[in-house]
Image 1 (cartoon, rainbow, N blue to C red):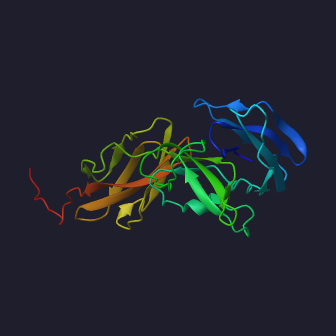
Image 2 (cartoon, rainbow, N blue to C red):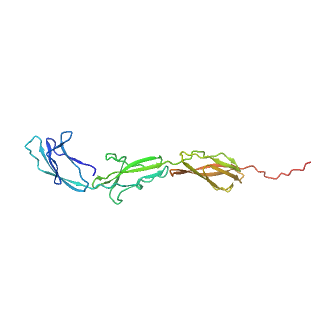
Length: 272
């Protein structure tokens, strides 16, 4: 149980005199005073659901003869707190589709008539919030979730939930390469916004190029011969993979220019 209840009835000069909880003396003839001079008794429930019976008497401070009030009875019902919700910390790569929050935080048990509440920290007094999950910005985001029983009004302890957005590598080198002549190599050196990033590339199939397709890892070094009499665009798909497991793809292009070829045979005359 998460709180105590301070019970105050009549103000000064009436003071607590005798307090019994389930037949056991809790406070007798020794009032406890607050900062305003009022007497009080703090009831702290135990962890067993049920009903506690609180008996009390008050007496008049100015009546030293000890004229007590008649015994009064307070019945206090104790309800079981809901258990903590089922929470699964998760990591997701930047720019991926944002998953729904109920894929990470669920009621426990699922069939219980509890309602989930979300907070920014673990204290009881914090303001309720609804976490807005996003994958646009990398970082570690922490929320706390609890379950409340609307029938009893009891709210259980909070469970921490960590949502981590991992950075995704992006290509920072040129995506349009300078044109080359047929029979020479396409070359490109890749760079990324993240360190510890590896690169893989694949050239799309084009029947006018020899070889028609090619793939590799690291930087591009691709010797190409074109059989076309017109410029041909070679299309490369670059896959970037970071050590954190996140990846992205980017397309780059290079134009392959044809080499001039004699279109007819020239017959030379004999000379002396």
